[in-house]
Image (cartoon, rainbow, N blue to C red; front, side, top):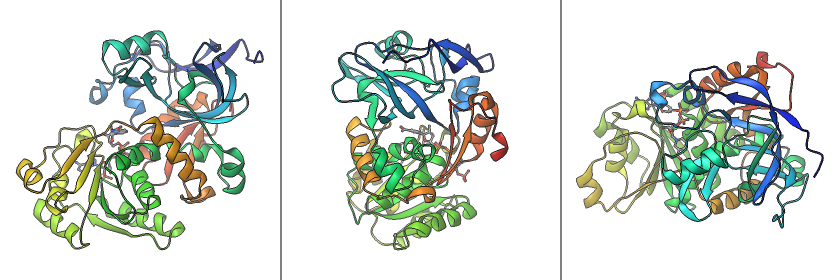
Length: 383
Ligand SMILES: NC(=O)c1ccc[n+]([C@@H]2O[C@H](COP(=O)([O-])OP(=O)(O)OC[C@H]3O[C@@H](n4cnc5c(N)ncnc54)[C@H](OP(=O)(O)O)[C@@H]3O)[C@@H](O)[C@H]2O)c1
């Protein structure tokens, strides 16, 4: 426990008007209710560059500065608070970025990404859980450490830790799909399926035993998506539908595949005016369930929602229980094993600019970008 170094390297955002910088920071020590984790891999999302640069499109992502950047990660427990009862030093864990107030489940925020804007979440983001995982060490709540069976995952199933980090993408659609009660055998539409979270949703829905209809504008990416799924799950039920922008025609294209039970949508703000969610509402069966996870103002078709008794549910991220069940699925071998799961680009903290740029373009099913905070090798040439 006393082996923590006095200082460690961290990728720091001093202020949104300034570029990020790798700095030497005092290593956090474990306090009650926390673990200090040596971060081996930290996932990067496609729009993280815009958030930290204060881009107008992502201005609503408010966060306190200065802070250590980074969201979820995977690492080894380096030190534990005195109230830890089950986690062990050296254990491999997934570090979840969704922080919840212990005295109010309704108060939650995303570590070093978005303080959620309520007095309670802002207090926690500012005073307690400010620093993220783009660092050699991170202090996080005990309950945010989800144990990973290293022998099973890295040994028998052949995953490298950087590839396991793709969990941060796959967990999000899992949260939405569980929230609408997706059942094995259900037919589910995923839209748009060509992006980072939509692509991950395809893999998750297949692993949950559903039949998938993947919608998107980009035909080449839809072809790659289908190939990616079938290469490791040859018997998976997977169809694709190109979005044409014609609401009625796209609904008819969906209906070709029979009864549709559910849908999950990840439309980003720039796609808010797209008609594809209305096409899904037209095509889905009476009593169908739709999970809305894209952060946008896409209007639906109210009278059809009413007359078809469709359930529309918004969902932010996932619950802690979802992470536990998801980890069981991963350890159970329900996803493509080893290198078949994801093509991961790995960067050192010093290559932060190349890393954030790569994350913006290396998106879609089976693609991910991560930091390796312990690495000092400049490896951006791998992208
Ligand atoms: N609810 C949550 O907890 C949660 C968690 C994470 C992310 N999100 C949200 O999920 C959304 C997607 O994130 P992402 O990282 O997956 O984004 P991404 O990788 O950039 O993918 C964006 C997707 O949207 C499609 N798209 C873009 N403009 C479009 C338009 N005008 N019409 C139709 N489709 C369009 C893209 O299709 P093309 O390939 O054709 O460009 C692509 O499939 C964001 O709003 C993000 O904030 C929500």
